[in-house]
Image 1 (cartoon, rainbow, N blue to C red):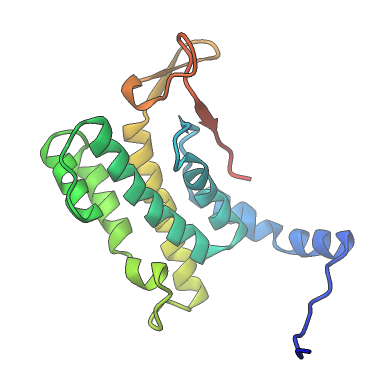
Image 2: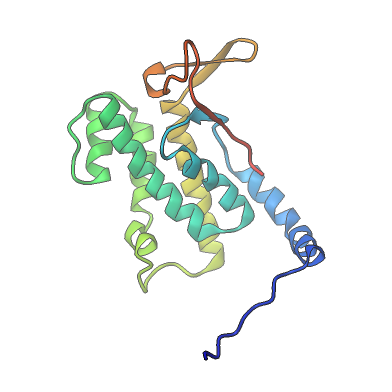
Length: 189
């Protein structure tokens, strides 16, 4: 028998009170980040879509780690789609993508800054990982906004016809039928 301390499940009223107590902070954080409204339905799109929501909810470690992982996945996705020889590191891949004019310098710089944001400390939960709440919040905001910078360039879309999304680079959007692609629509809450 163990002496484990079990936290009892909360009631709906306790959860509602907790949510409402933090609502003004969530709204303020939602105002500080950008979210690309639609991305293609690929293996990392669900995780990438959760980054901004995690930041808004105040789960900063998750927002940072997942944003960094998604930027790594996005570099692999782009190298594969554009048939660019993949470097060992995500940093190398983003530099190659920029050298090959597949992405802009601003998208590359956003990716490199996001990956440079103590990536190993967060992915491996090293002893030196940031623990100051305000610094974590600022870093998570920066990571989420960098992800937006990259996604809004790579997955740029227009609405030429009402209700019809037209991607600038259709080769990045998986076909789901004639004239139809798999799309993940997003929101900040």
